[in-house]
Length: 87
Image 1 (cartoon, rainbow, N blue to C red):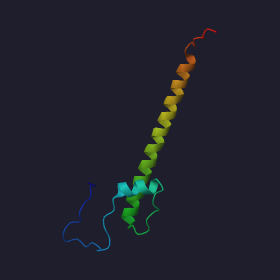
Image 2 (image 1 turned 45 degrees about the vertical axis):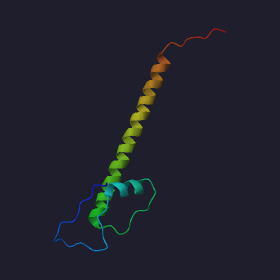
Image 3 (image 1 turned 180 degrees about the vertical axis):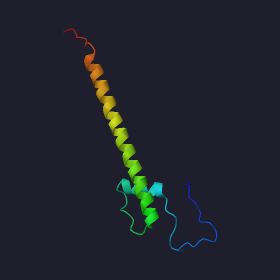
Image 4 (image 1 turned 120 degrees about the vertical axis):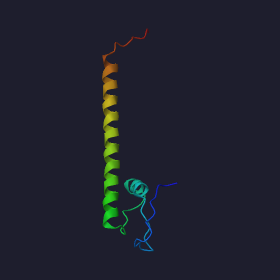
């Protein structure tokens, strides 16, 4: 079950406005599944923007790490003496 915070009792909450699951919405927006929602408050939009930035930064770091690892592995295999197969 998603981790959602319920509004405190006694606070003013718009009846048509439900709390935004920033993680799920950020994933959907970042993956291009849904467009950027236009009905977010300034705070929600800032949270969503920050979440998408963290996701993209993390994905970029993982990509760079994989590329570096592949490059290191390729260099190691090139340095090994290759066995010649008998004809």
